[in-house]
Image (tube, rainbow, N blue to C red; front, side, top):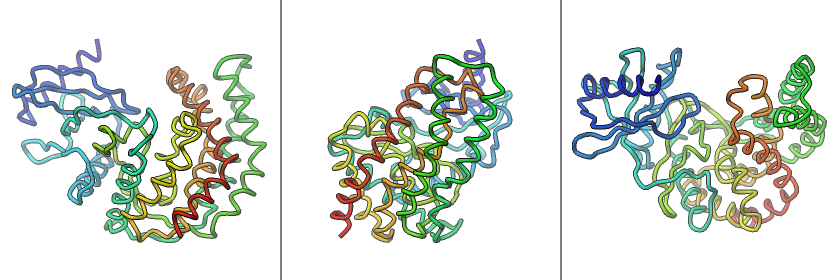
Length: 346
């Protein structure tokens, strides 16, 4: 009933504040922290509507939308934002705050993994995006200690805190909760080895403004082309090596294409470098090691059974297991991947 009620509120907001008269408003793809809708108007044009939860930082969401708009103006494929009649990017009424963008038809997320010409297309799109974001007014690229990119000490503290919470919880003997608890224990024990492997990173890496949440659900593909980059976060500095690794070495790609992900990574990094030659080769060579370190230092979704049991869906369980397995594959084949990248980056 709430979904139907919210859809009615969305329809009213579109008509009153956006001058869009919807003939139908239906639930759209599930969002991490938002409820999403697809609206169709009388002319048959479709719109993607994102409804923010109560308490959401709307000012931060405005900054995120502005970052996407700026990238679109520079040629990055980002859906156009529809503004209200008063020129706002977010409207609030009836207890809901929403933003509206053009609907990207005929596209699919990158959650199915990369293959074929998609490696080059994704590498080129991320490189072009990073080249633009390196000039963002929020600040130019800057060096950052590699130990801050994959912070093993912080990961150790978080895993210890998580295990303390597990110790105080009722014992779990089966299912995802038991797996998560055991995996957290193994991950904590492996951190000294992870730290030793990360010592092979350069002393410093490049940090710059990035998309902020460039995961597979936020990259839309149409055939072998990138149709859209969506769901930017507000401008913030992070490792330039972290972001391409996160999307190109998605666990589902690494596990689903065991014979393809290393040559695919080489294609993506080569296309990235052609689109953004200003990023140092050392940063691009670090992509697979940073990706493996990031997975090894993450507590997501190991903490979900304690933090938000309702969020532990079969999809979350499968993704959590895939992340852990993919980290092992990345470590096992890391030197091979780096050797291939050295040839690309010569």
